Length: 219
Image 1: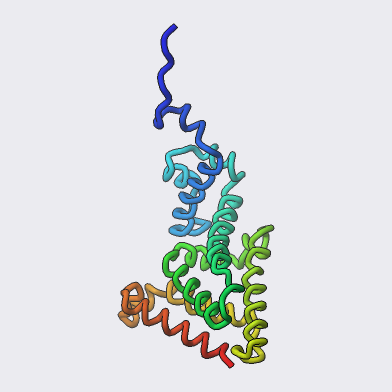
Image 2: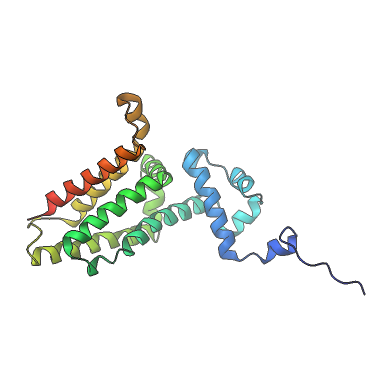
């Protein structure tokens, strides 16, 4: 009896052994690139399949359809932002330091993930239809408001934060600038000649939003 040929990374047998989690992650990466470039309406499952050299049938097997795949991409992107915030362990830091770190991480995350900003912009064009229907996105994103609420209460109890702070308002203040400078970077460059990706501009604006938020929150 002839020896069986060893399985190599390029054989169908190896591809079938690929872990489902790994396959889902590869589909999400390809879908993220497609949807962030072309939006939900312009994105095509055939093109997503071509990006990862697989079949549309396989994508449907894991995600069910285009809308479900788009929802999974949004959930993944929002989840990465929330994971970055959770990793800060704000409760272990003094209130002012905790708020500074939160602003810095929010700024950095938006700067490093313009695809997240593009997807959220597209979802707003569609009046948050997918986000509103998601069973996880609203609940997951509520966590940051709870974290900020706890941070505000702790800072007020220690006498470093002023009274009257609202967690959602503070979240919007932080995210608004971080989001805007990425979502509008092309028009800002075209109108004002401002290169927002220049290291000195990025560093200066990072310091500016940190100082603005701390001045707003400080007693």
